[in-house]
Amino acid sequence: MDELLNNLEQLTNLMISDLDNAPYESLENFVEERQKLVDAIGLEVEKCALTSAQKEKLSRIMEHDSAIIARMNAHRLEALDGLQRRNQAKMQRSAYESAYTPDSILMDRKK
Image 1 (cartoon, rainbow, N blue to C red):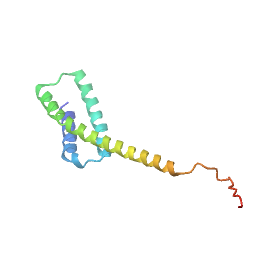
Image 2 (cartoon, rainbow, N blue to C red):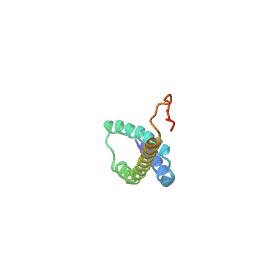
Image 3 (cartoon, rainbow, N blue to C red):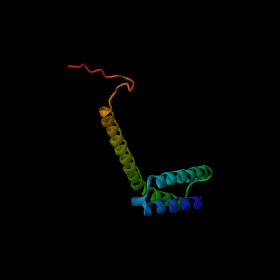
Image 4 (spheres, helix red, strand yellow):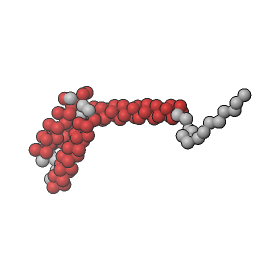
């Protein structure tokens, strides 16, 4: 159990140390690895209860959650803004594209 908590703490500290520059891919990897550790800790907790020292370590680790979530939300908002700009550009482009049949023929009258 202590080893799992140490691994979780180390993983969290690595992410926090470079959180401002972390791309979404590294956050995604962090979440996947963290979930594996949390699942393993959950299985261990079913077998035996956490000691007070382990509970304190876990609460110290969880203190960083708000910063990590804020960074993830920043990435989400950035992606949402990019999608909105892309959709707006697509709408503007389609407004200028003519909806004509390329096989049509234009007939002029002679005056």
